[in-house]
Length: 249
Image (cartoon, one colour):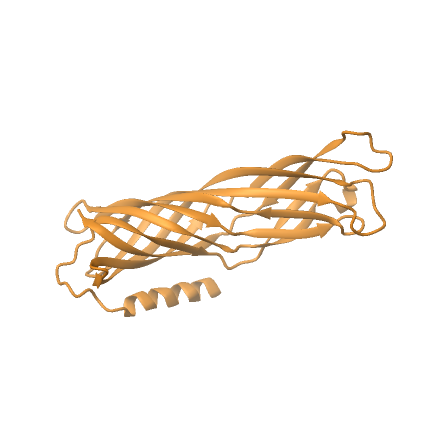
């Protein structure tokens, strides 16, 4: 199970890092830094194209889970001597994508992919020296752009020429477990930390419904047909970030 192995390696790297030089550790403050995420399991997306014969629909194509890159800003504060709560907002570019050719001459192309979105997370942690395990719940927005194009690039052509596209933004709950580690007090004169977390995402797929034009012999002018492209969610992703604390709370 590669994702568990990678998660374990990342957590080991955090635990093996040097502890902060200061003996007076504090977790409260405002944090900013880059944000990364990665999925590891190849999935499949489906295309229901009404212009295709029923025997060839739905079409199933490969979907690469890709990852995400962006930036986070967060806030943590103490609710007692033992517990820290807070949350963060991340703005990301989501890079999953699927690309598949189908049809009578395999010249109809279907694409599905991501774009710019954001994630908000509320979390609670239990500091143990320089390490803070935590759990949280959040909301992830997942943009989806889908496109179908039949340009008859290969003979013989059928009567399903034309194209169409649709965009939407899906929202999914996620549940997170992770660990944050304070690393040093001397980086650009401010304390900083690294964290790694496993995020489980709600499994409802993204269903993008739109229409496309159809032209060809015997097809009335202005004919449009519905298209449904269904893109599944990765069950979970690994998210990491490195943050600088701008001020204490």
